[in-house]
Length: 232
View 1 (tube, helix red, strand yellow):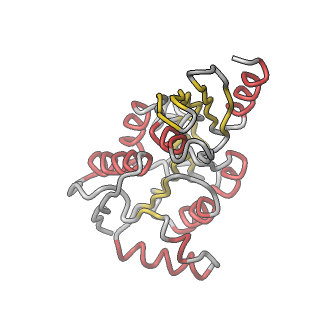
View 2: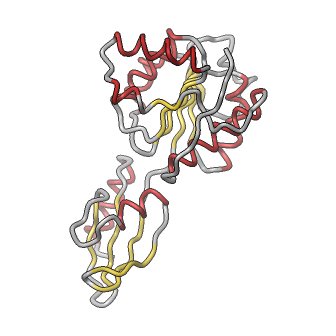
């Protein structure tokens, strides 16, 4: 690999920018693609980014090998609640870098959430510093509009690949009214997955966590899902 290309890959990793190294197998010529768009490859790079999968594809240039360098997946959980305790190990098993944000000190404790990055501050104070990008899932679980709505507003003007919020259809309708009154467009609001999770008939926080993680994975991999049905 050319030194200049290697340095650009390192820089991209540091700034959480996805890049792909494209190698024309017949000639060995290499180039970096910094987004999913490449005139000679069609949708191949976008698909490789989405699936986190390197591989060989046939193109007008002949066979090329696409080596994906995606930033690590990240999950920002708003709310140090019971469901988050079950969601945490599931997300860890799928290699997410997890941060839990909750300004309520009684919830955001090391005893309840050991060995995880826990920030007991308001989302609007934290999220701009963390950055919200296309490899980030943001999940609002507090059921408190003063906390969840702030986080959702920030997520909706970002490139987060997944935005979800806990609550029933009725609760979410009221949420949409508040966010729309605050200037969020219908197009942006449609990005929120709520009621959160795939409809598996979930009962209790453990099964809700499973339905959430299933939906996050499905969205990441480009699959359609049906929403869950939550009470409250």
